[in-house]
Amino acid sequence: MCDYRANSRKTIDAMSYENLLFETQDHVATVTLNRPDRLNALSAGLREDLYAVTDHIDANDDIRAVIITGAGRGFCSGADVGARPADDDAKPEQPSQNSRLDQYGWVGKLSMAIYELGVPTIAAMNGVAAGAGMSISLACDIRVGSANSRFKTVFAERGLSPDTGMSYFLPRLLGYGRAADLIFTSRDVFGEEAYQLGLLDRLVDPDAVMDSAREAAVMISALPPMAIRSGKRTLQQNQDLDFHRALRNETVGLSHATRAPHDMKEQRDAFLEKRKAIFTGN
Image (cartoon, rainbow, N blue to C red; front, side, top):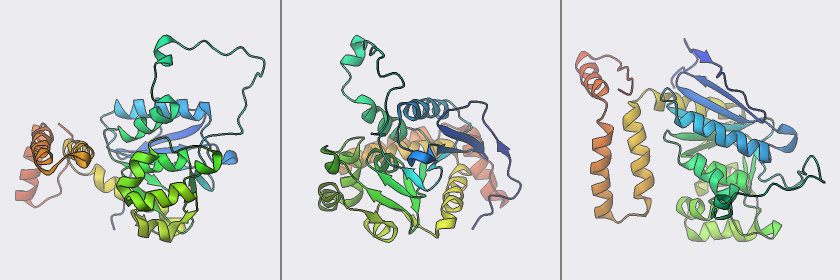
C-alpha cells in the first residue's frame, strides 16, 4: 500500500462554496457534500455548487482524479423534498426560451456534470446514498464503501420513475434483472451485498473508506494524465459499441493518449534508468 501521506502537499482552493467543501492535494481533488443535517440532500444551492465545482475541475489540468463524498453520516440522500423557497410569496422567475426546451432538467444536468468529468472520479460511500444521491455515486467511475454504506433507489416509493441517469447506469453495472429488482422493490442494499452485486468496487472497514479512496486516487494521479483521460473516454464510449467499432475507437484513443511528448519520453527513460517516472501531462 502506498503511503500517500508522506511528503504530501495540500492546497485549499481559493474558490469557496456554500454547500460543499473543496480541496486539492497532490493532484487529487476532494469534493465533500456539506449539508450533514439533511444527509447532504440535493438542495438547489448544492446543485449549483456541484455544477460550479465540476466546471472548475474540468478547467484545471492540475487535477488528475476526484473523490466525491459526504459530510457526516450520509453520502447523499437524494433530492431535498423538504426544502421550501425562502419567500413563499415570491413570484417565480420567467424561464428563458432555451430553458423551456431543455430535455434534461436538473436531474439530467447533474448526472452529466459528474459522468462527463474528464478525469477519473471515485465515490467514497460513507453512508446512505438514495435516489439522485445513489445516481451520483453510479455516475462515478469507482465506488469505495464499507458495511455502513447503504444504497436505495427510492424513486418508486415517491411515485416516480428513475432519473439522474439511474436507468442508464444501474443495468450496465448489475445487469437488467438485478437493476429491475432494486428499482421495482426500492429495498435497501448494504455494504456486503452491494459489493457482491457490483455497486461497490472496494469493500473496506468503515474507518478506512476515505483512505482507500485516497490511495486509489493517488495511484491514478501518478500515471500519465493524457493516458488516463483517453482511457476513461474510451471506456465510456465503448460501452455501447460493437466489437469492431470498439477496436477502432481504441486506435483513436491510443493516438490521443500519446499527445504528451514529454510523458512519452519520460516513461521510456524511467524504464531504462530503473527509476520512478514523473509525468506532467505534456
